[in-house]
Length: 230
Image (cartoon, rainbow, N blue to C red):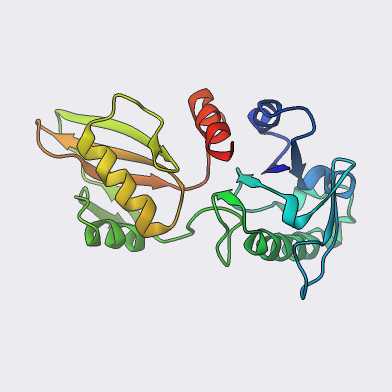
């Protein structure tokens, strides 16, 4: 069973589910969580814990892949909960899913972190430091009123690159960019990364932006994710 975690506004998440054989994937959102997800977990014996996804019974150990297209739930998604309790319920459900996803041993795009359902949750300075540490050139930026602002100049070339597992989605990406993407994915322990590179005047590519929450709205990304999860 493939678990796709998303929200009702992301129609592409449903398309992602449809790319797998019927009944092999299930979409879970906070807006229908009371209908699509039920679990009776055993902390001491997690794999055989019973899970119900969209009416289909399975076990935690039988979940073979996860795609988390959101970094967090929103209180307003829990419309079926009393308004005064939504903030609390959202926090509790988020904490539960971070634990649940962390315990799963299957392939995950992307694995959770202590404060996020998917992706890094790192400050820009932190992931740029990691990038520089593994030999990836970084594009200069300055803080303005506490917000990072990239330094720009005329004549720049921009390149978007996405990696899923060890493969680049963009098949025509320069070999050097491919090497940078693989180094970043390994260093950050994130099988999915989407990066924006800047190239000044025919020189080397410099990392300017990094996104770690899978974007399934892009058809090529969905194809690559489906292939990665088998």
